[in-house]
Image 1 (cartoon, rainbow, N blue to C red):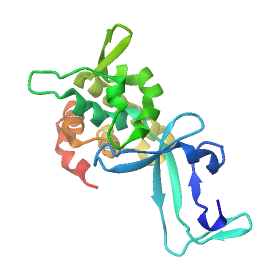
Image 2: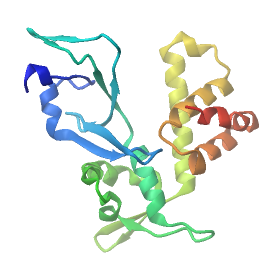
Image 3: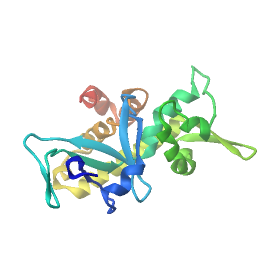
Image 4: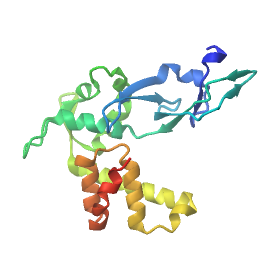
Length: 218
């Protein structure tokens, strides 16, 4: 890659940026449904790729100057957030009908997005966290389970809350309800209000539920 085409990528993997070239992939944003860029790190973890650009910035790379001072930041993301809307769509739930079971092939076969195939190894290990499963012969079939999803999300809220309290004094003095609101807003970057964020708010209390509209704000 020529110096004029160089870009700066920050990731918690120690490999050179060039090692990621064949691991970039496009998946749907779990909230908007629009195309988003992800990268699979050298440790096999899925990372979300974000782009930042400030005015009048440049990078010094070895003996060259990169006039494009933009920054790419790759941060780990749980693939279950990415696959959740796909599972919701595929089960075709209607009223009291809980919907259909789907094979892993069905789940990772998303038109225009071959990158979902890269999630197969992780999904084989983890779909049981949020899905019912049935074994037919040598094949496994999965159907999203709302109660499992809620339990998984509440676990995320608890773990994020504890991590924030222990990582910074800024959060240690927050009332638990205020901290929960903050955490749910963070999760709202990866979850649609309905059917996922609203049940979390309802489960955690009326006061938090009244703050739901604030959580939806960008």
